[in-house]
Length: 283
Image 1 (tube, rainbow, N blue to C red):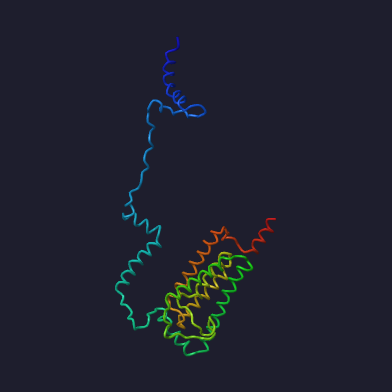
Image 2: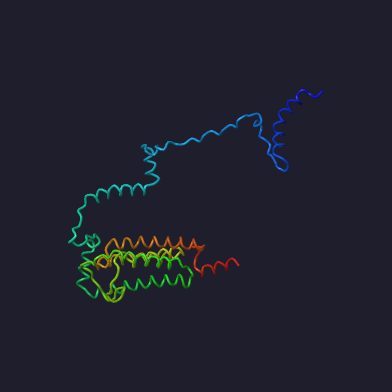
């Protein structure tokens, strides 16, 4: 006679063996977990506790945001400020010249340059040399160092500038001081929006910083700032042209990096000379 516990064990194994038979030959059936054959439910994990979504609206939450994110908070204040300014500032009449605060700030410099034509030509010639320096560095980066990011960014920037310049042609400032020494040389026509001089200098400076040429980048930034002041004093660009030129340089440098990444090109690599040195050191 089998022990009393044997029939009970056979009764518990019966559902599992029946499931194996129903599965057919050649099919594996995973054993049921303990208690599943008896119809017991598996315990559910306790729900994760979440903080209320409105916690940041409390004084402590607002103070925490201001402490951790002061820059976005500053921009939020700027949004509120300039919403009030925009909706209350008097509009410039259609027959009046544009109001440019950069022109107001450089009025004394403009008068001095206007009274000295030789100084205007000298500053224009120096500015043309700086533009040639930008072009020379960007060409060096792609042809000698085999780093195409700055060149691609420059091509993108000038193409977009041409499209925008054709789309909206701003009037030339009435106090514009032209010079045959200025780039483009020969007092030819040019697009005002946006400044290719400034954008090209920004692209070159960003590329210099990527390869550790910080002093050269600082020099280009200082010359770019002097270029901005000179263009305002000579009325060669509106302030908005120069400000957007800085943003265009940053934007197209980033877009050039995205393009190279899409082509599986390492945008963080140094120049070819640095790679040769590192290979000699590792060999």
